[in-house]
Length: 192
Ligand SMILES: [Fe+2]
Image (cartoon, rainbow, N blue to C red; front, side):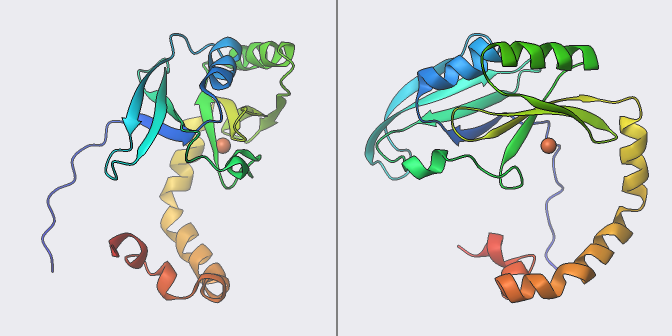
């Protein structure tokens, strides 16, 4: 058995990064509409690692807790099709607000910019409104409902069983679709 170094605490998200079509358009959505202040960024002339000459702007928005949302405005390598609206199961993120009052105020604000913000949708532990950013990424705003922690704690207690039953139920479909080796827990991330 391989001895592993003890895992050190992962404190949170430093940044999540996606492509954008245009930095100014993206700043309009995240700063003017959603209110993330003081966007910042740097222009970098060559791609790290490969050294390819493909200048890009790396754009950062700081959220209230100090974490960042980041974008690459890199038109040289961009495929226009990437910016088509992506299914929520394929990609979305959820910003957290404090309360129902804040959620509804933000929904009204977003709609006043002509951006459609659907909902609120009640998920039992959170309530959310949904919209798309200019890059085809679904963005959710959500707040924690009263029983948020109790509901998740209760699910956590039985999650071993939930997961085992789900894996049994879906294994054959996944093997048929992806191949048994592709869903081996080590194969995808260990291979070079
Ligand atoms: Fe979500």
